[in-house]
Length: 336
Image (tube, rainbow, N blue to C red):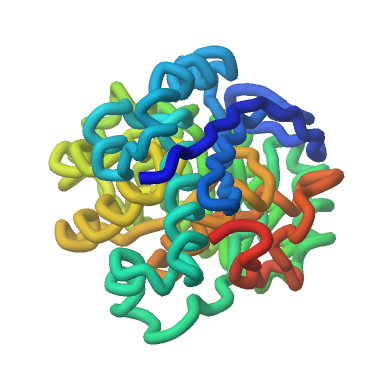
């Protein structure tokens, strides 16, 4: 096989300030992998996450450990077997998919593994999807004003943090009466929060609750009523996690930075559906390059959360196209 050339570097991107239960960010760092072969250049992007004990230096170092293997033809299958899940593998895996498509002279969704996965929903190019628009944690007054500004969006995702969440949600519902609502507590709730809020949230039309409890303390969900479906985010990284989640959650949130790339994300989505879970596709802070591979998982997902580029001050050349909350397929110039 012709020798590849691997390039690994990090970038910093500025975004609108956004708060969740664990803190606030106005910028983020990504690792970008470029693979060059036969005159084609392919890319993958990943966002190392401190919550999962990842850093830029650790991610770059792990990829460098595989430089020789990657430059001498390492396959995606070998990558899954040898590199652990997480941001490093995500960047490499997505670059390998991009390279495979370019070497074949096809769009990535025309490759057999992906076309078979999409076969359940489409026989051609993937279709547009509707993403949630996320509201970061703030006071009820400010969150209500942001909801009013975005009240024409079909579905809003509300970041919550524990005390005061009912007041936040009432303000949002008052100002966005027609939007569908899903909420994300990012592990911040106690069982008391859950029991107090869920009946009220049901009346306010909330359709899904994402990760109410810490991932290492979520077994209590088996003892609680679920009038609103509950989604595993921090509790679900890859296919190996699914068995434990049966009886605790109704949804799983798939993120490529957690699964370690598109290859495992495809497996996770199929396996989750087989076990009766509904799937959501989510994202970390990312540019359009990081979101483009996840667009393929969105085709079968019941909830799509791919809004990260909407908060960027600048994005990639040939960025994903958004029309309000509608996301269009990535161009070949961007990825795949």
